[in-house]
Amino acid sequence: MQPRVTLALKTLIAAMLVILVFSQIVVIPAVARGTAEHNPDLAYLEVPGIIGATLFLAAVELVLICIWRLLSLVRMEQIFSEKAFLWIDVIIGTFVFAGLLIGASLVVLALGRAVNPSITLLGVLGVVVGGALALLVVVMRGLLTTALQLEQDLSEVV
Figure 1 (tube, rainbow, N blue to C red):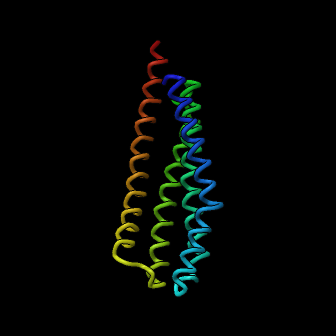
Figure 2 (figure 1 turned 135 degrees about the vertical axis):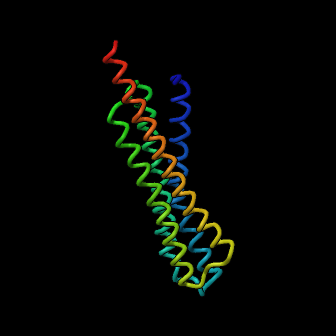
Figure 3 (figure 1 turned 90 degrees about the vertical axis):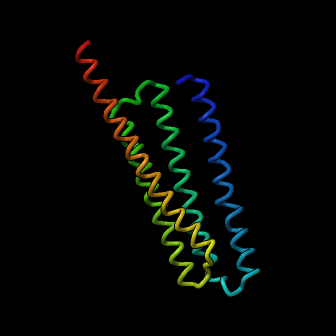
């Protein structure tokens, strides 16, 4: 991969991380506070909502950090090493966690009678997307395993 592409991706990841942290610190609490003020009957969901949204964005941040590390391995031409599997496994686990978090949030909203059909649809979609992304990365992990084995076989031949 070209160094400029790696640098551009890392720059975008850094920008996303800054935006996500700002959202966790400023935006989420402000939106939760405003929602609680406009809907006093749902005010008891303010703190769980802040916690759930903050955890979800932390999961996104963790995936971005893992991608950053994988890009570093690509740049150092070490992507076909055992080091890459740790970061890939963390990504898989984070996608599973995010899907479970969305599912749990949907249950909390349903129990609080704060859910409507569109929220339910978005929640189910979030769980399905989380599962699909986890499975996609599992497939990509398998491809990396195969590529690593082929590289090792080729190095023995040469």
